[in-house]
Amino acid sequence: MYILLIVLIVVLFAWYLSFSASRLDRLHHRVETSWEHLDALLQRRAALALEISHLCELDPATEFLLTESAYVSREDSISDRSDAERSLSESMSFLKSAAASGEVNIPFPLLEELTTLTEKITFAISIHLEAVTSVEKMRSRFIYKFFRLAGRAKLPIRYSFEEDVIK
Amino acid sequence: MVISLSGDTRPLKIGIVCPYGWDIPGGVQVHVKELAEHFIAAGHQVSVIAPVSDESASLEPWLVSAGRPVSIPFNGSVARVLFGPIAASRVRQWIAAGEFDVLHLHEPGIPSLSLLACWSAEGPMVGTFHASTPRMRAIAAAGGLIEPMIEKLGARIAVSEMAHETMTSLYGTSAVIIPNGIDYSHYASGRTDIEQRLSSTLKIGFLGRFEEERKGLPLLLKALPAIIKRNPRVELLVAGPGDSSKISSSLDPAIGKHVKFLGRLSHQEKAEFLQSLHLYVAPNTGGESFGIIIAEAMAAGAAVIASDIPAFRALLDDGTNGLLFKNEDPASLAQAINTLAGNHEELAQLSQSGMEAALQYDWDTVASRILSVYESAMAGHGKVGIGSESASWKRGR
Image (cartoon, rainbow over all chains, first blue to last red; front, side):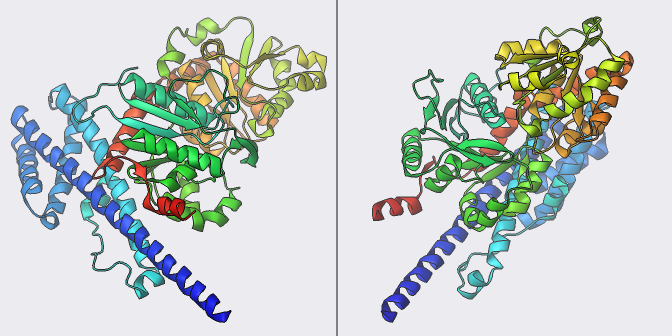
């Protein structure tokens, strides 16, 4: 009788461990896919920045800032990119307000794309950060640490530019 | 009404789950219906599954019934929801046959069809949280059970700041905030300036399930004598489903002759009703998360007076787009109405700023934001399918 009970408990516990591991696995997957989506949007933004700087007559300082950060964010590794993304966010939002007040002339389709892209990036960042937070929270629980349910998966990284865009 | 499928937006197959009875009036149902219609008009394929009480009635071609809903008390109202093995198997069949690109679950945090769908499915899923209420203790207790399920959602949407707070405190997750949508042009087209509406009678409107205490009609009726005293030619128009005979017989005839019950209005009648008003009053005492009717009244050009509950305070931008009165205080309500009735300039100004503010809730804007969230959830995934966990559960049965 007791043996049966013990076997039952062991089976249930094993099921719970496998259930927990698959939960974490799903979250890890979500962090990856949400990052890929965000990354693709950021690449599109960099391309748009270059297009705007080619097509519009900007003052030299803005143009330099825009092209420089766009090139960095298109080519460098993500750890170097964070600062570039940050300055790109800033110069793009400056451009938007300058266009709204008529100081800079940006063709309407480009301006429209800039607006939708900015909104999409804001959403994508908040969705990505939510996944990151969930993973961090789950991996800090005792059962996940003790049984090493995360395996060899790396802890997700937060980049400073993400906080910047979201606020 | 048509949004362009620009650039990267290809036509999608979208599955939407509505947890509440389809043929019962309610905010979530209206939201789902209008969202579905908007997406269809924009060229997407949409299928909605919902509980339906009367399956013999003629339904929209894109609606699938999951069975008859049961009544449970929820959030100060009676919610008509559905769960159980039959609903579970219907929703699984719907998911398996649908080959959806994305599944959009409404109110997935309460035990309902949406939760069943979330449990069964695997793949790109988005959840929208509507409710904002501190009274969901039963659900808070079940939070630990629900958490692993709503974790499967690739992205979450909260319809308001209040709904966001509620979901954060219950499930410890965060969301993107996208407000509910309104069909702006439906309420705005053909509206007249508020000055032109100013005839000798002051028209005050109320719309909602007036028998429910929290919708606040009793409060408005209590304020009425003080309003009549200052404005002898006032008319209170009450629209919405319910039995009005009990209320009208309990009123003093001298008061009652100023109150008119219009019954349930059609979509077209609703726009005409709102466009005929000087003042729209929302005296709700709580349990509201958004207040879509207020946005619609603003689009129709009526000046809005609302109780100062958090949802309305947010919607009216702290009183910029409408006048707020002290919640559950009939004297404060009467004073607010009398102030506006005596000041046409302020009335016109509130009507104007309301019309401008309502534009941000137009479906064109709201639906394209929801689409951006879909894109996020779909990235890196294939189509929606039946999850392995629930499949093995089925094999084991």
